[in-house]
Image (cartoon, rainbow, N blue to C red):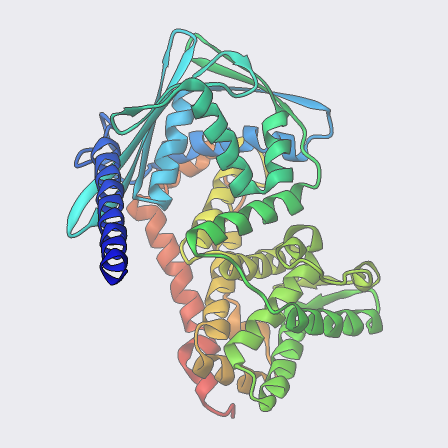
Length: 448
């Protein structure tokens, strides 16, 4: 009996060992088939996206955003291969590990992508390619991952499943059903898309899902944000309907966060929740959806004010939006988003490129750095605000900064956003911001 038991255990051990070897062999084979030491991109970007790439990419982004904001049932979008490849260059600028390019061959759009990663000090690439044909809905053909070719039916099933995992079942189905037709001809791409509902909630949900999958999800303490939102709403309802300097609200918040941190709450975290609550108060449609479950019923009654900086509401809006973007995204994205908005205005006949607005963006980001990057600086900012906060303490003079430049004027003066002339103006703006009181280190001292 004992010998039989030992024999059985030995057979189990051999079975486990054999199974492990088979699994290891399968994984190794899969890696060999899908991973390469070279990118499949024939001409990978050797330098960041230039100003022309940015203009083309922004033009395509603006077109693709139409289903979110147009009220028509369906929206027709026309683009070309240059805009698509400019979008890949734009993405590569933000995420250097991602390379991509597109080609139109007859009535098919060939897309090649390479995802770069490092493994045991070796640079490797996950190469993915596929073709989109003129069709009703999205239908992929000839999908390849590395040297592994996938069946068309399986490829499309995998694509649909991936979209639903990233965007959630409801939003994924809405997106997939919204792509009515794709027509590819003569180096042009024509899309017919159905307008999407619950725009900002959909965007927020998608951002959160991607964050969860990449380990960069945004987590807020809803109770703390709700506390500051109610605090701001109560203050706003008690004030007359009039224009008011943003400095009053910032001082009010910093004094309250200082009071709250006496209860062993982290100064930087409290500042973050308070400033984000202010962004929600100003633009609930943009920012509230990142925190499910917030009670915003009283916001409409509280929105009876006009916040300004240097007597301009646009500056206050740029300032607060930049703080919110700094909270929602990594550094650098906020700077790029600010410049992207200005470039789009100058290209499409909006308000024009404004260095004054860029100054408000960057001042907001600098204020966010002081408020939320470290507990030491956050506490110092709170203590500084106890005795008052003036606009000149944190907001630079915009006197002499060029504004309302159209595309032609911008190119004639500054060429693009990489030119020495442009960078010189940006450096001058940063010098003005750094020269303001709180950025001169006086927040660590008692005001005279």
